[in-house]
Image (cartoon, rainbow, N blue to C red; front, side, top):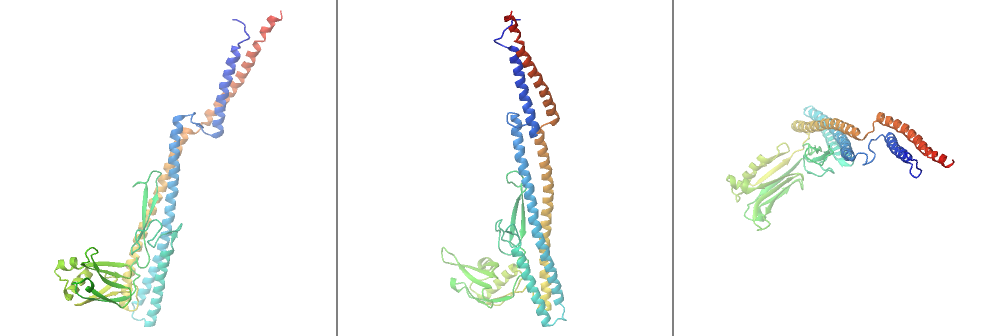
Length: 398
C-alpha cells in the first residue's frame, strides 16, 4: 500500500461518517425536543399532507362541538322562559276557576281581571325581552331571520354541527315559536264592529264600515289595478293581526249567491265566516244587509261564562306552550348526542394524526444514544487517521 500525504482517504471517510452521525443526532434531538416525528415536509411528504387534512377536520369538529353547546345554551334560555310563562298561565287558570264561582261580587271580579291583565302583560314582557347573545328568542322576530311577525310566528336558528360544508346532515334547524299572549291565543281585547252591505255593481258602493272600536275591524272593496273593474273582494282585518280575504265570486256566486242583492251577500258572508273565522276569538251575527263581529277578551273573568271561556283559552295556551317545550327538549337531547359523538370523532382523529406525526420517544432516545456513541467513535477515528500521516515524516528524517 502506497504512502501518500496529498489525500488522506481515512480521514475523509471518518469525516463523512461523523457528518452523517451528527445529522442523525440532530434529527433525534429535534424530534425529542418537539415531540413530533414530522417537523418539516422533508421528514415525510405524504405524512405532512395527511396530518394537515386531519388537523382541519379536528379543528372543525372541535368548533362544531362548541356550536352545539352554544345551541344548547340558547335552547336552555328559551326553555327557562317557557317554564316561567307556564307558571303564569297556571296562575291565570287558577284565577279563572275562582272567577267561575258565582259567590264573587263585581268588585271581586274587577280585582281578578286586574290580575289577569297584569299577568298577560308579564307574558308579553318575557316574550319581548328574552334574548341570547342579543338575539330575540320568543317574539317571532329574531336576528336569525324573520319568518313572520304574526301570531304563531317562528324564529329559526341553524346550528352548524359538523366540520363539513353546510348540508342537510351538517346543520340542525331549531324553530322557536312566539309565545306572546296573542300568539298563545290569550291576547285578544274585546271589540265590536258592524259592517253594512251595499251592492257590488260599482267599485265604490261595495260596503260601508262602522267600527265601534276604531281601527279594529275594517272591510273594504278591492279593484283590479289593471282594468279598474270591481274584483268583488273584501279584506277583513282584526286587531291588526288576523286577516281574511273574502272573494264574493268564489264564496258567493260560485255557491249560488248573487252579488247584487244585500240579503244574498249577507248569507254568503255568513257562510264564509262560519268556515274561516276562529270561533275561539270571535262571534258574529249576520242580518240581511249587515254583519256584526265581536272580538272577545280571551281572558275575561267578568262573568261566569267568560271565566269558563277563559279557562278553555288558557288550557289551549298551556297545551301550545307544552308542545313547544317538548320540541325544545327533543332538540336539546339531540344536541347532547351530537356533542358526545363529535367528542369521540375528535378524539379518534387526534389519535390518528398522532400516529402519523408524533415521535416515538423510546425509539428516538435509542437512536440518540447510538448517534452519540458513533459520533465519539468517528471523532476518534478522524483523529487517528490524521495522526497516521505523521508516520510519513519519519522517512524524511532518515
